[in-house]
Length: 339
Image (cartoon, rainbow, N blue to C red; front, side, top):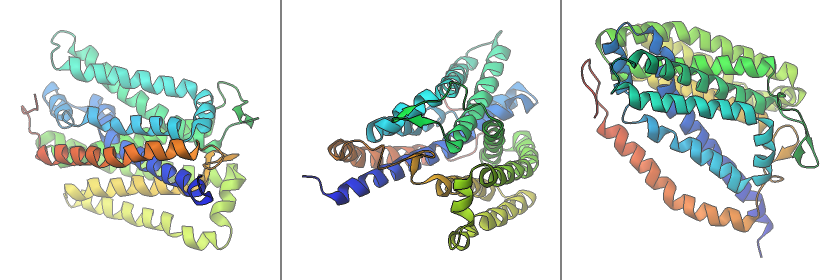
């Protein structure tokens, strides 16, 4: 017989695992999507080769975390999956198609001669659209969905709101920023200098988007306003935006002073702080604003069974990721690549 304690803690553990998987995906796949967003601004094919080669050993492995997030949601929270998928079906399909275009273009561009410009367009377009629709998914999730009798009761375009579109643009700008600081870290010469220029331009843009979303959410959604501005929550949560602004100031300073590693680490910190702010706004709801992680969780036996496998596999995946990033830790210079 499963104790009440397990029924309470298992959904929380799975929610944390999903949150970690999504955070790893956003950070790791974010910079290679950002490379694609910045692709049209490269001045030559040699520079584009350098940009693509900087992520060549990593890009397909980064999407492992997207699979873990989606699969974990289905296994651990099947009711949430059955509601979220119909509610967000179209942006999910658009995102996946864009990722397919991006992936095919990544492989074919290296062997194409006469059609390389077409694969350049597919790579840049697929990366940009994938980033945009991931932001739309985020906005559609945060704003919530209509649920009746534990089923989605809204329309197929309920997600298409100004708030969701704003989130789509914000995530696109954010991915471009993390792509730029990745290029600062991994390239040199003209590619690195241009990436530093892009990062200086994108950092204030991303901060504006973060500010707009931070203002919009409490004004449009009373449940989020109550979470942030009721006492004593306000005192506990106020450090999040304060630390975000301070870190942004440090990132700007590091960019101006020519640092290579610190801007990348700082931008990751900005992403994680924004992610933390979203988590604070919606937890424990997994289907905002009605259903919590406990109400949408699978049977405890199912959660335990999958958790055992995850406990064994997750360290192996993390170890492999660490090994790959350590092995290919050097810079990619013009004319070099991984084949």
